[in-house]
Length: 121
Image 1 (cartoon, helix red, strand yellow):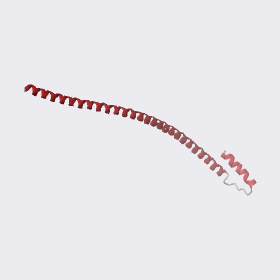
Image 2 (tube, rainbow, N blue to C red):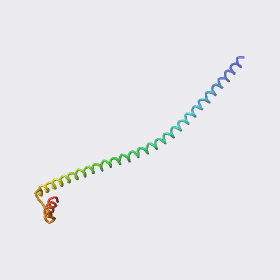
Image 3 (cartoon, one colour):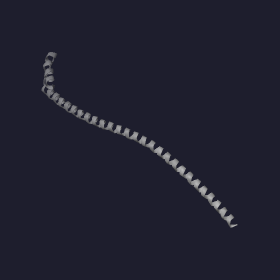
Image 4 (tube, rainbow, N blue to C red):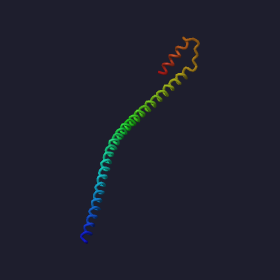
């Protein structure tokens, strides 16, 4: 009787061991599948990340070029303002010189116009 009882217990333990082994094997398979999926997703994300980094680098270089162009345009604008101010001062000085000149005809006005143009030059 004891042998039958031990045999039943051994068969029961064997069944539990087989069920546990099958469950663990399935768990290992699921873990490996999830790992492979995660690696594939990581590779895809790395490609996307590299593309984004490249586009950001292009944008940064474009912004740097725009900053340089803005600085050059500002310098040209300041130079033009200085030239315009100097031309305005010359024009004002020429007008002061001609302030008392009166002309009735075109022939009378031409010497004053010539003098004005020479002063502005």
